[in-house]
Image 1: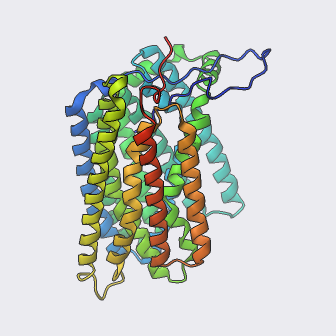
Image 2: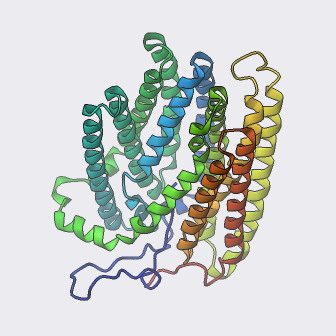
Image 3: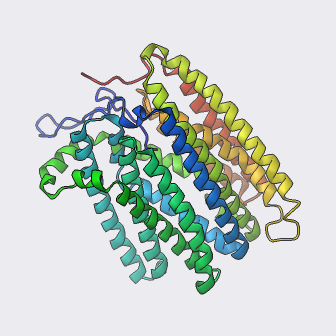
Length: 448
């Protein structure tokens, strides 16, 4: 789900000279969106579809882990994480504007701006990959698959944001199921002709995202056709829209990148590994723990934001505290159960290359438990007048994780535990912000 960020011009001065003929930056107003009006039933159905998709994908993931050497699986984890990281910037976060108003003209202008930004970004990425391939810096096949995977992710981000803004949760949920069926299946099928190689897993990732993107475009084709009609495109409109919403990429993008950077911090520790098998265990643990983390977000974020927006300003602080307590209990119970199950699973894996991965999963459950809770709190915090606090918190946490890795100097279970404690501290900072800063004055209010 996209973040919902309110940027007040008084809080974020543009700093443009008085003589510069620039369109005043428009704040991202906290209006009720169509998605918020879709109701509890639609949100629960989306969560159910997402949970279904994640369970489907787990089986393919486990099959690929059984068929592929540990190093190949670790390479795939790096490829996927890098593609996800870069995809955050493809639309320059202009898709965040979609969620703030039910006005169709505003949505159309924001969609065209995000589409143009995405097209420009992918063009630059294609040129960069072509140059890198020609210079021999990257394998041409890997670069091509990365670009295809990145394009698929960009389309999914764009169209799913539009679908969410219009309240079409069914399209988003079904696209998750489509990808969960196609991508793991392609992993197994491609391993047969290509062998248990990185190319097979990279290609499966690209195909899965492209098929899911095509489904979303087909499902939303009627709405999208109205947004991108040839006669409504205008360079002047794009310049005006970019100027009006220029505050969104300035603050949303750094916050999102820092947050994702912290989420993949264990991958940053892989180069420190003196034990390749432990590195593979960490990569598999990350892939497995991403599933419940994403499930938690899929259930909590849309329902929490929808409920929050429907409440009067004077009751928001009490509601946020209630939600925070509930999410803390749910996250603690979920990831404690995962840690216990993982430790028990080690008995089944004795004598295989994955022996000991249960202990790794159990230790990393602390790290991902903190991330799962931060995700909805970060989305709520984006409605406050203090988004800089979230950027600073994420930056400090990422820096702390880097210092911890430098201190230990090598990948170990102790290092993973220390990074988990950093994640817990980051989570507590977000909890403290949510608990104390969301009174009547804590939320930005749209100007009339």
